[in-house]
Amino acid sequence: MMTDAIETAIKMETDALVFYDEASGNCSHPFAIEMFKGFMKDETRHLKMLREIFANQPVTPDFASPRATVNTVFSLLKDAMMERVKVLGNELEAVNIALKFEKEGFDFYKKAAVEAGSEEEGKLFERLAAEEDEHYSILLETYEFLDNTGHWYMYEERGIVEG
Image 1 (cartoon, rainbow, N blue to C red):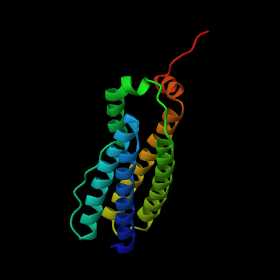
Image 2: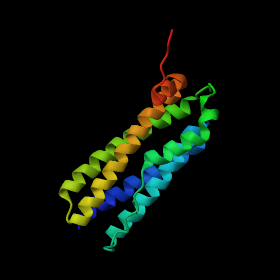
Image 3: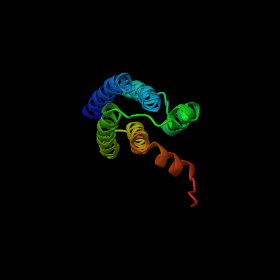
Image 4: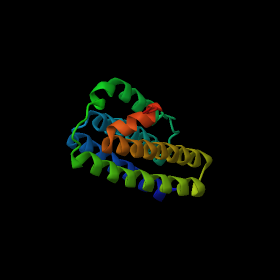
């Protein structure tokens, strides 16, 4: 068992959970708040699986699609989000920090998957890398949305401007 890698992963997920909790409390934009809360749920699932493998217990697979959650949040909050809002520095700063977390997590999990001590660990690390990559993609799109709401909406909805 790769005890060091699993301990590091548990620490990373715990740090991310704390950060996303603080970020959701410090943001004012409803989409950012819900996105960070969704990431908290993902990190909690990751922690549960990592703790199981650390304790030499069979891992109960519990994977989800972070993008599906965000799409649901987008649908529920679409009207509120489309109003031009003054984005405070908190949202953009939080997203920038989260991008760094997710990139570091992805890199760590990809390396850990290659060096895993068992097939089960390798598969877990690969799946965690995939979810971190999906978080990263969501965060990039969120940054664009918060920075320029109208442009992001047109891009996401594939709108055509005629004129």
